[in-house]
Length: 296
Image (tube, rainbow, N blue to C red; front, side, top):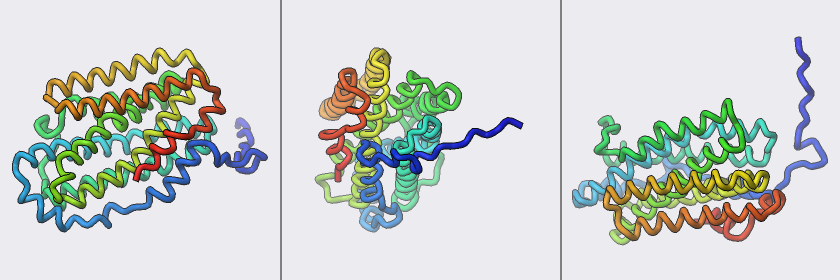
């Protein structure tokens, strides 16, 4: 029987935990800002408002809500391979943050299903293309599990970058961010659906930490290997171009398209800076990255 090598515990070494590292700062924020219960959100007015909403508004809200429900379940199911990859590399501070990340995605999944059950009273199968946009179903149902599960057997830096680009930069950083914008635009001035808007605001605050971690994670990969940048830039532009084609097909309003591009370009530019940074400089992420993760 082969001898099992002795494990060295990071927390028992002279190094200890590096609380100044960006993932640990996100971890500490999550302990303060991520403690909310989907069951505590008052949906009483939403239940009263829903039947009174104009049908046109309902037709715009339904696909948004169903797409978010599918997306939150997908990211809950598919995050584990990334956590395992980080753990196997011994990145304890990152793994500690990712434990909060997974828990928060589970709560987001719970919130949208609670809204569907208690406010919309929908019990039908929601997989119809009429209810969920085809392009997003492909991302959630095919590309995301493919990219994430590949990390279980081929956790190369290239595959780690591809996985985080799709998960953090595209699904969370573009699709979800654009969705929040659309919810606010549709309901923000109507004094209706306060429970839904409260839940969206809490989810957005959680996701700001997730996106900030994704920017850090990909930047770390670039700082470790500058040759990864062409792959990262190409893949991000490829995925965003597909989103823009879908927006054009669906006649997405210009202000929403502009907002999506603004979010995308901001993250791509920030990751690009890592080409001129050391690994230690990436560990010390500050400024706008920290501010983005403090959205309230």
